[in-house]
Picture 1 (cartoon, rainbow, N blue to C red):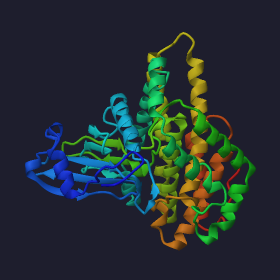
Picture 2: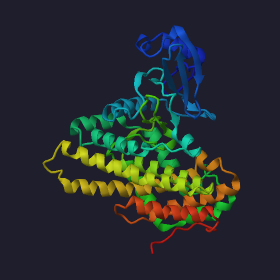
Picture 3: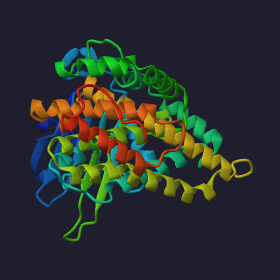
Picture 4: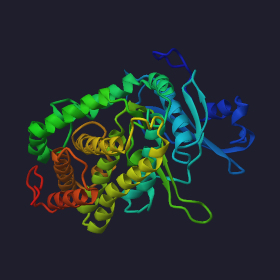
Length: 422
């Protein structure tokens, strides 16, 4: 048994995972526990235990259990209540964007266990991108997912009283504080969590000292802490997306998973973290001298935004209160979301280079290539933070980011910089 702030509860292992399912008849439709032939632990993060169970007939499910501490440091407590937030997000997002998240088969609030759909025929999108693969349409799927969940969980598409009650239920203070610290503060100050290649020291100092960057990131942190627009995924990046290309009778599929950071916040946050990871993937491709792949990756900025905007416009006639929410309100809202997207993308890109929780896109590169890729990512972050306070053209923005990344990858940028408009 393990002790946590929530009390004692038993942690799963492969044997206990089988017994757990056997004791829950409601899961029998998804797994024949008498015929289980494979139990695999998939846990690869610091916060959860994850087990995939398969039976001889092809049935399967995933059990995900929240740990009461950080795996790499058991003295660092972590609230297992995040499992409840993930269950809430999966239920609501599954209703609002069918097929956009794994199906939730059950949630055990006493042991913080989620029973989830087996998606082992999918691959983590970051892994696929690192291999140079292209999953066409995935970025558009995610743009529509963000639009549907944002509209349906906000006062735009929901009764205001119901929305307020849902907002109260979704308050997620501990995990929000992690984002406030790790993404929106620590990378821009001196902090023990910050680690980076010594060749980047001048770049990191210059970015942190840039008055425009500091002002925009500071405002973004205030927005993150106060702008409760919609129930967000809260950690939407290429490592929290599963993709399946389709074929052989199976349709293409894109699923956002690991929504334990879900909270009510600014809609642009989910889009911004996604955009930053497209930029990081493009930095990797340019470091590997693959401009065609980098151009395709940067094109995902436009694909995701265009899908988001189109879907929000499609949903707009269904808004809950059209009496005062006219079309000009929609245009202003889109401007606001776009600007938030830019600055949150800048923060996430910086965090992945400077702060805690690096990404394999950059870290798996040889050091001589990693320097240029990381420098390019920081320069792109600076460019994003300096973008004017208006809705950008994602295609023009992508071209400018591509030039910055290429200059850094080729050694043409000796320290942090960004390309000004002609």
